[in-house]
Length: 444
Image 1 (cartoon, rainbow, N blue to C red):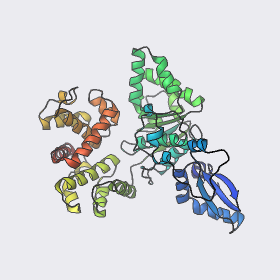
Image 2: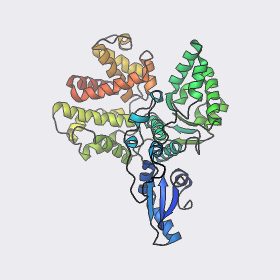
Image 3: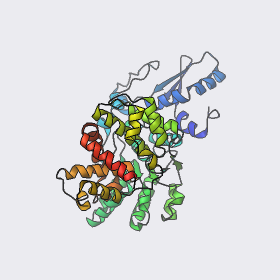
Image 4: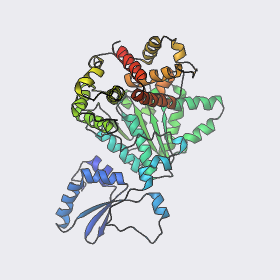
């Protein structure tokens, strides 16, 4: 079988299958229901061809999913489900985040493998992420995922955490951005609690570290992370790291750390091709309040080329406008709402300071108030709109956006983005403000 597929597919998907013979048929047990579905959809014909070649036409292939650990522990020792029955999804599989997530894991519920659209541009990174989530500390350690902002690196890191916890409910998984890691390190020094900081990050099973390029030029944190890396690696724990570029191009990091990033597997994510962009739009359109015609999805996919955030944001603007004006979604309406998309392809990259300054000017308030501590309305809502625009129109990560707003936590930024997404679907005034500001910023 290993000769019939490429080495990555073999190690990731086929080698983990456990074979058994039942009544003359080959039963292959997958580590999870998700793994089963992937093998069935992508490799079952290949498996069947090999089986027929080896055992003849009388031998059939059956795929089953291994029962979750919790289910095995609860089942009586002398009872086993008949192998011929198809696997049924458990409650834990349907809602893993509600039952098994630790409060300190920092995993975002919606960022799962099931919600990740796989295409030619991210297929290898997705397969590698799936592999490490099923065998943490195994083949690819560390897994280093790199590529431009807005292409799904953070989504994959969270998905690794969710799937690991689904398969191993007792696993200690923690997601953290490099900026958060740095801030906790500084707080540990100030409060003389470095032992607690070290214990927090050197006694976990899976560390998901986002935007490692933030460590560049910070000698103290590099030294601490070097020892954290060594401690976890030597204990057989899994590290998954993301960056906006390959380790070799993180020129200001120490050679000893860059070389460790290259011990495992490095995989990049490229901007999605048109088929993948369409698939992403179709998946998001399933949750839209009304039907989005194919020609509208084609229009968006053909004009938003490099950034998935902007792709999803464009669809949100169209559906929000339709919901607020009670107008049927059509190509002419989409072209009108998204008329600023064409020049955006040639525009320079925006900064958080430009978004804040433009928003403050639009609402006729001082920029310092927009980033200040006041939670009074309508100032707080205008701050949330500015955060939303930073996420939609810049390449900044959530922690970076929070930093631009006087060091607010990334969860505050995430709440603001979700709040504005909801408001533009129901509040015409907010929709108009966001749409006008977006057009103003794209024309800078």
